[in-house]
Structures are given as C-alpha cells and as structure tokens.
Image (cartoon, rainbow, N blue to C red; front, side, top):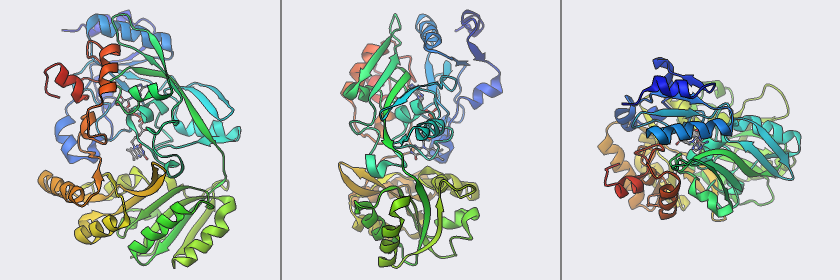
Length: 445
Ligand SMILES: Cc1cc2nc3c(=O)[nH]c(=O)nc-3n(C[C@H](O)[C@H](O)[C@H](O)COP(=O)(O)OP(=O)(O)OC[C@H]3O[C@@H](n4cnc5c(N)ncnc54)[C@H](O)[C@@H]3O)c2cc1C
C-alpha cells in the first residue's frame, strides 16, 4: 500500500493535486470516441497528479516513483484518443502542462520544453518566419510531447509525411526510471525509441524539431456534386507540385451536415473539400477547381480576422463535431493505397461508414487516409467493417485499442522493447500499454 500523503510531503514544493474529482478528470482523455474503450477504461484513475515545472522536479518525481515502485503515467493535454494517458494501474499522473518554455527558435529549428502547446509554438515560430511542419487539429491545446508520444501526423503531413518519418524529430531529452533516474539525449534515429511509444519509454522533457518556412495560408471550401470527383480532385491537388498546400480534407455528404456553423457555405447534399493553400497559389488552385467542376464557396486569408478556422473541422475534429450531434458515431483510421479502394468502400457501406479523407504523404507518395465516421451498432459489426477494409487491401490503424502494438504499428518493436528494458527496468511507465513488455514479464496486457 503506497502512502500518498507521505509521498506528497516528500515532494516538497512540487505542485500536487489530490482532490478526487480533479484526479479523475486528469486521468482521462478522449477515449470516449470509442464505445469499446469506454467499456474498458471508464473506471480507471490515477492516485495523485503531480505538476512539475522543471526537469529537476521531474527527476525528483522519477526517483520517488522508483524508490516506492509507483506507476507513472505522463500527461500532456489529455487529447489523445486511445486512452493513451489513462493509467491502467493507478499511481502518479505526471502533468507536463507547466513545462512549456520555448528555449530557442532559429535557423529552422525549435528547442522547447515538452509541455509547450503547439498553437503557441506555431505563433512564436511565425514571428520569426517559420512554422510547424505538422500538427494535429488539437494544436491549440495539445502539447508537443503528447504529439510525439501519442500522435501520428496532421495538418502539414501532405508535405512532410508523418511524425515517425526520419527528420521530423531531431532530438529529445528523456528522464529515465532507472534505479538512479537520469536524463539522456536521443538524437536523430534514436528518437524513434520514444516516438509514438505512449510514454512507456521515459519522460520527454525537452524536444528539438525542425520547422518549415512560414507561408500565408488561405482557408478554402470547395463544393462538389459527386463524391468521387471530390476525391480525384483531392488526389490531383496532392500531386500538383506547383501548388503549395498544407491541408486537403475531403468530406462525403452527409458529413457536412454535422457542421452547423458552416451551413451557409455548404448547401444540403454537397460533398466538400477543406483546403489550406498558400496565398500565392490561389490562382492555379482556382484553375484546378474549374477543371474538376467544383465551386469555391469560401475563401479567406488566415491573416484576416474573424474567418472560419477550417483546421478545426478536419482530422479528428470532424469526428468531434459529428459526435456533438450524434454520440453514437465512432470512427476508423485507414490508409487507402488507391482510389479504387475508396470508391469500393463508399458504395459498399453507404451511410453506415461516412467517408472523411485526409491526404498525406507516405514514402513520398500522396495517399488518402480515412478517418471515416461509423454509425456504431455492435463490436462484432465494427470488426466486420474493419475486416472488409483489410480484405480489400486498405490498412486499418485500429483506434479502438489502448495497446500500443494493436493500433497503427501492428507489430512488436524490438528496439522500443530493448530501450524500455534499459530506461524502465521496473515497468513503471504507463504499465499495461506495451504488449511486448507485458509479454516479456509473463503478464497479459
Ligand atoms: C478532436 C481531436 C482531434 C485530433 N486530431 C489529431 C490529429 O490531427 N493528428 C494526430 O496525430 N492526433 C490527433 N488527435 C489526438 C491528439 O490530440 C494528438 O495526438 C495530440 O498531439 C496529443 O497531445 P496531448 O498533449 O493531448 O497528449 P496526451 O493525450 O496527454 O498524451 C498522449 C500520449 O503521450 C504521452 N506523453 C505525453 N507527454 C509526454 C512526455 N512529455 N513524455 C513522454 N510521454 C508523454 C502520454 O502518456 C500518452 O501516452 C486528435 C484528438 C482529438 C480529440
């Protein structure tokens, strides 16, 4: 039995939250997007939340956890979707939100504390002529540490691929949970040890990422009468190297009906594309829209005030809006390797699986990734839908599991396991999430 009162006392000046309601709140994320995860995770909760403000304090907490064998689950902003930061075995929630310093932005590189919000970093980078290479649609509140440990890609992935692609993370400073906790630097490929590891492999305290030259982006909505025409337009725009873009998001009817604030721009029955296009590329974009028989219903420069922030209708924000109206809706994450696969699923499932696509670059090639909205009935039916996609050659990154290896990666990562054996020999970090570790300890995940 762990005595959290004495732990709190020993933590001295470090902020601690023990009020039950607050601890419960800070133990959760957006797992409720999945009815399957709700069943498994709704009652899970940490015992104490600790809020460090600097690396020294993180090291102190790490020492305390090792000495007392307390599980520790790191939390950024808690916007993850798979219960990634929900503690399965209680213990300490390490809330990184106060470690938000921006140490340096220069020469196309940012060095920051892991708890910095990406929206703030983007704003600061833009002041110096740079911008983030990629960020999730939750960028206003999500932390960079949480994105690297739990996210995959987002706005900008049409140019830079996914977080896991070599070059998108330069360096990470990590606090270990060894017998004597210490900080280590992971450089270049070494950062893969903590990239998308759900905080099972050390506590990131400082991160260095490359930036992109800043552009003036224009938010654009394009309407189409036919869904597959919208998809083909999206593919041609993705492949048009002369048109600089940051976002190509395609939505089949009736998805736009879940966006009540956009009804004046999207008439009933239309399919649409949400785009971020560089200001100096609007003319060629207009020509491409004309070629595909689309109609621009909204065009607004980000520099002007009071525009619609289209980003917050894309990626998993699409699901958020749909669930605000019908919380029986859940979603899937899919890589479609060609447009025939998209067309087949569109006709096969009809309104049961509503197609929402985000174009991104995979190994240099632009493909549509699905974040389809699914009208949920049963777990069996959901699995049937997943199977049908896989039988037809699409790849599903299952968002209905909290197990690291059962989501996007689908395989045990030996390098991550070896790294965990070194930095977390007592298995204290986010226990129960890394299958490879649990199996190596003869436990079922
Ligand atoms: C509406 C909505 C839209 C979304 N859109 C996108 C999207 O476009 N792209 C995308 O990739 N994701 C998306 N997500 C998922 C999520 O918002 C992002 O992955 C986000 O970057 C997570 O950041 P966070 O700070 O909230 O992390 P959290 O949810 O707090 O944590 C995520 C994981 O990272 C670990 N972690 C956090 N900080 C650290 C650290 N310092 N060191 C080690 N481990 C750490 C946690 O333990 C947890 O396992 C979306 C989610 C929602 C609800």
